[in-house]
Image 1 (cartoon, one colour):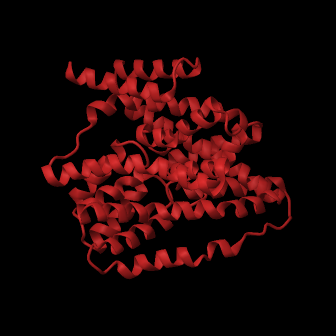
Image 2: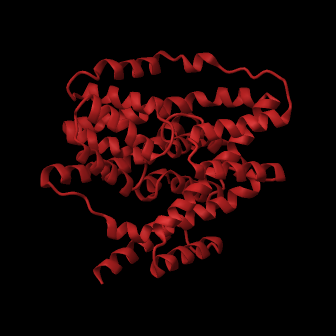
Length: 368
């Protein structure tokens, strides 16, 4: 299931979350709505690619350590292969990948999928007037441009303050002082002045994956600062091409690293860069449970997580507004979005089937 999603889920993190919910909560009923919301709140507090971390955490919930690895690789590898193929064409044929025709039909469907997910999550996440009020304020703050992490922490703090509890929350400090992660970040700093070898690529991308919060646009800022300005490995044009491919292809946007790794070091570079940027996600998910359990033992901690969940939903609403604005541009795209939403709410087709249909409509429209 995670492999199929990794090969077909386009539209960015919000769409990935919506598709994951459709599969594991609605269709297969592997986890409850409440547990899904809790995991979404947890991964939003972690650095790295949140939708990928959600897939990894779901795999861990369902099948332990083995599930963590299988779900994570299943979600990442198909996207890595697709992005790697695009990078091969880019390097060897000098061609700039153009997938606009296909994705013009997919984008309205993605917007509908996100709206459907929000409608399913809202009753669990916003059960009270207080929750709805905080969500409205969070949405206004997101539209005003408040950073995602600041918004999550602020909503959690508001909930904790409203709870009025004074019990102490104990955080497992050892989990965050892991020599493995310290080594990964340190390696990034050490190899930064060296040529773009496989080891240098792994260290640099591991450093980025360890500290990055926010959307794919934040990833662009980090990549530009490291690879263009500080290291001089790539040009501005190459960075924009890589980001375009990462956004247009299925799976995690962080497979932009695969493209850049291939451009800089061929197949070995692509594998090293991909492993580097995703390795921190596996680590952070593996240590998230002690933190979550510590929070759950505390009234203040529980309230904090509830506030984070509310903020997460508000962020999804904000993203859905942006997606709709960008995707619904004429009568055809409006019909695609409305038809997909109607189909999802009446359970007449799966999200994957609707995405395929949208892609075909986009291609047919361009050919016509």
